[in-house]
Length: 349
Image (cartoon, rainbow, N blue to C red; front, side, top):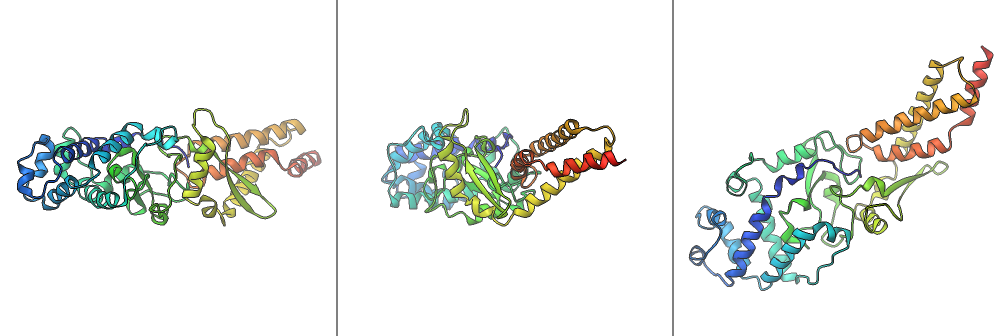
């Protein structure tokens, strides 16, 4: 729920070259039926490393499948469009003019799932398409992207090890299979968020993206103390964030965040008690020197210090956004009874 400020997710940029190679080959060699035919075709030197290697039987089978795809020209067009305009499409400012039929989607899904599962963990693939960089397994990439962090979707679950993470296809591979390896579309999240997602039938555009949007500026929590309930809403307008409200609503719906935050009032209570303690400690540190204005200012100062602490821990501490927003309400409803008691207690001495 906080924008991820690292650029480490760009590690898979090199895969676009492979996707482009394989789709161009399929467009130029439609209707291939045998491995022998594949070996006689023209292709990039990198693609030939796999296409002409007898050990990669499945790889060559998927090449034949792509060459037989009736909509392969459209697939190639869509890949180039989404690669170039990914952020615009996520924002809703660019809308593709064509879609793929169910038969094509089903076939491509199997092909790109194979590429995602087998190639990203293949040392030869890295050596061929990314020779200047050190080979990394998907597990190592997940560990690096999740280091000392919480899930960018829910802001609740720590993703500090590979066992606690999944790599999510933000635009689902079932509907956008040609984006199966695209670096912008691979987001490391907690296993819970990724596990409950059923994007085959439920996905949204436009939507906010945790790597490219300041989600924390568009979504905010509100609190009903009497009912001990938490609500989440989206702001109508935020500078530099296109279609803010609709994209935020779609994010909330996709991850069912209102439901995920039900039953977490204990986090609000903990923050409230912590803030009371910090103000009480500040009072005792300055006891005998305070008047009505200064004790109020002292309380405000401690709230600001805590808010800055939470902001520094954004994306690294669970429930940081929830607690940050709660302090806005805590400030507005600063316990005058508590401050008055401090003043009365001070005068008795």
